[in-house]
Length: 475
Image (cartoon, rainbow, N blue to C red; front, side, top):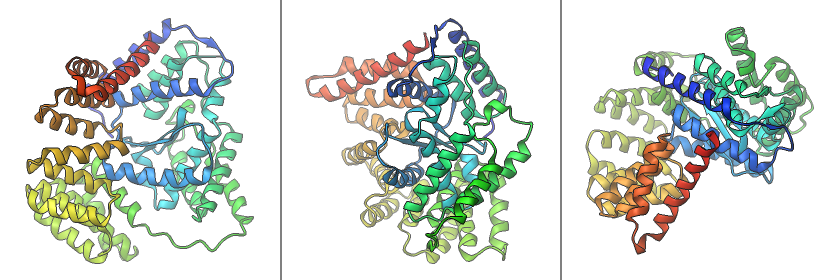
């Protein structure tokens, strides 16, 4: 991910503002760190993330990472929090377990992963940290800390190497924080042991942990000296790799079935199409397509990537031709029918797109992507109420999705439901990190609410209270 000069200037100004805020915020001595305090830090961290990062909120990406996270949580047992999984547009090879069950996965890490098992091993490791409350333990052992300084330091780590992240971390330190957020050797071993156990219980081959750590080790050696030590939260990948290999030697289960990599490879291509330039991706996919050392599935998924890049370049006929070859190879993959509908939708063929989305959703009722694009098609065809109903169903599954709130807010306004329209526009602004505009729209929702808008009014008031709580914590 590359920032423009204006973006860097805005980020630096944000970091400086937080530094000034922290300079006057009283800090408390370290004491027992409660779940409630962890939630407070998570809430403030999420406010920073919404402002400074691009969260990839495409429905199929959201559904995929939450499916993997949900599988792990089913075997992990009762947890302190409801977990939330986010893919952020950041080129760093990193994933991070933040307070209160938030797991952030960088697009740069997914780009490097070679299989779903490798990605699952990363998410399982981060869940291991969160379940063991390792970040809470790091914060509790700090000499002085408050929620705002902790959130700022964590945001700096999330951003990765660079002047903005260093400004954020040093800004939190200027408030008197002496946090050491790098996980200890014991923390890493506990998270690895839990991740290994989760994968075994899911009947997923834990050897993927070794191949993932081998990649981390190579990248760690390449970056040695380029990234400050305080930004490296996962130390010693070589030692961790040896530890996991020892676990494998004692593994008497074995017999793991081969994994279907279609969903992983498709989502990886989708994320690359969102975060990378087509000029860089098209030659990569063309080389993979011609590489006889790759298996047939890998070469066919390179064709899928080519289709995405043709769509990005508005070559609709080329995109359809490429995707048709993939569909012939995988006739049972309903998600490809949705992908074909997206091409027709972007080409303006809304009637044809509608049929493809309708049939895809009938075949796969849980597909968030098919439902999302069906809602968009219905809107384009003038069927506002049915479109709004589908968006509301999607928001039940993805309540913090800014794009869904924006689209539903627009439809509600067209239908004359102004209080609801302003509420969703305000929620959209909040989830995009614009607190000022969010408050303005939410206040309008409260003022315009009528007797039959009680639920909308309460939702707006609740979100205003959340924004107020986050803002007061900065003061």
